[in-house]
Image 1 (cartoon, rainbow, N blue to C red):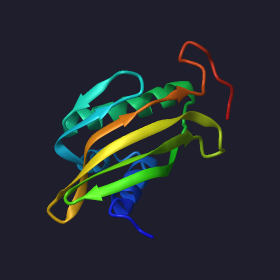
Image 2 (cartoon, rainbow, N blue to C red):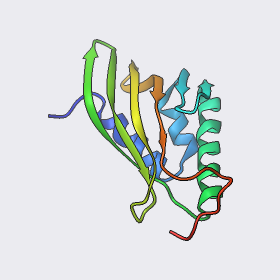
Image 3 (tube, one colour):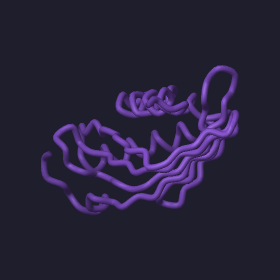
Image 4 (cartoon, one colour):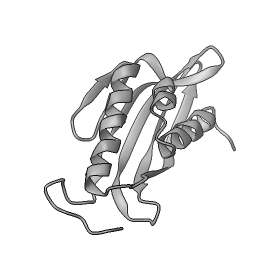
Length: 139
C-alpha cells in the first residue's frame, strides 16, 4: 500500500543519490528545519542545502571520488489531514556497499499545495567510518 509520503521520500532519495543540493532543499518547507545527528541545526532551505553540501564534502575528504548512496526503511508513519509524521532507519553506503553512516530518522511533513514538504527532519547517526584524521584505503 502506498502512503502519502512515498513520492517525496522517493524524490528525496533520488536527489540525495544524485547529489542534487537544490532538489534536496526544495523538498523542505521554506522554513523547514533539519536536526543533524552530529548536533548541527539547519533552519531554512538555504541552510539545509549548505548542510548537505558540507556532508558531501566530508565524505569526499574521507574517500575521494565517493558517491554516497542513501537508503531508508520506514518503521511508522501517519497522516493527519495536511500534516503527517514518519519514523525509520537509514543507511548511507558507497556504491560498493561499504557503510559510511547509519542511524534513525523522524520527520514531520506538511502538504503545501499539491505536494508534501518536510517541515522538520531529525536524524541520529552512528558513524561507521573513521574520522577525517585517519587516512582510508581505496574502496
